[in-house]
Image 1: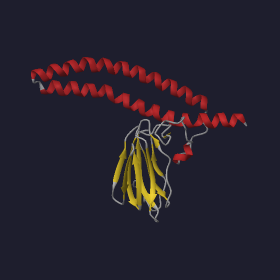
Image 2 (image 1 turned 135 degrees about the horizontal axis):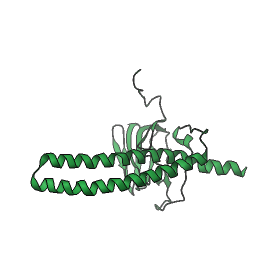
Image 3 (image 1 turned 90 degrees about the vertical axis):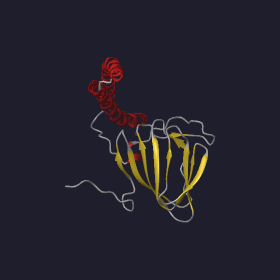
Image 4 (image 1 turned 90 degrees about the horizontal axis):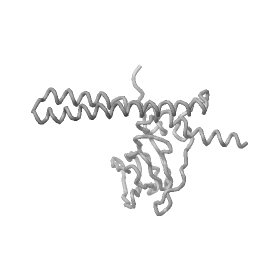
Length: 217
């Protein structure tokens, strides 16, 4: 079986949602606009496929059409408005995708209180068999593992970093390569655990609001 292929004319939804990246096709109707917001961690890429749209990013405004792309960097307030009488379809991606994902802003760019959207807003169905308490425990355990790996990584960076400096100074290519590879070998697990921590957090964060609302009823 081959890999999935997505079509912007039929798959108007989130097609990939991971802590590393969220990507989707989005269709907006004439005159429709999105609230001013930013992403605490993520850079957002927009590629226009059909129609015309006005973007405001960090106070600057540009008009885009099919085949054109723009980027809103992390913490840059941005919003979009469809121009003309035709719908607009775009591809967008946010990386990384870590809840709360959207930080609403006032008209003058000030941050509003956090708004943790439910998983369904990103076309994700959470595993409700996993309890909130279990998710919290996983979050704590993964955070502790991250601390332990970070300490080990710092030791390796210190030792191998000095070896790398010496190898460069002496012109020893193989020693420099070996030191660099050892540094990366210690860094790699950090990124893997951060990714796993992001997966747990993306399950946990929206569930807190849902849990508290259901308990108030």
